[in-house]
Length: 65
Image 1: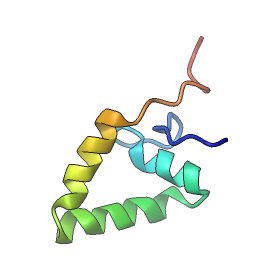
Image 2 (image 1 turned 180 degrees about the vertical axis):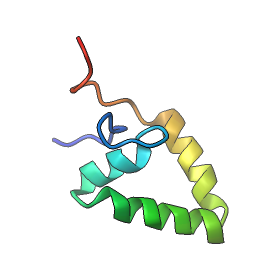
Image 3 (image 1 turned 135 degrees about the vertical axis):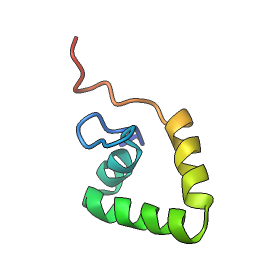
Image 4 (image 1 turned 120 degrees about the horizontal axis):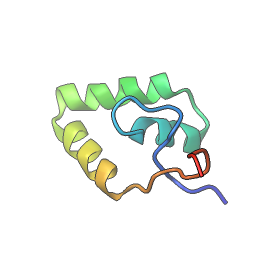
């Protein structure tokens, strides 16, 4: 079962867009463009990113042990 987590491989700020892209199996660039459009045209994109950054757990599968 897949779980939505912040990506540790595909991250620019905190890995939210990378985690969403990995969850849905799409390119991270598409997610970032869509997210940027939400941020530019309806300020909700920024607010949703901050909320996701706080509540999404980190991906611990590829971190150092």
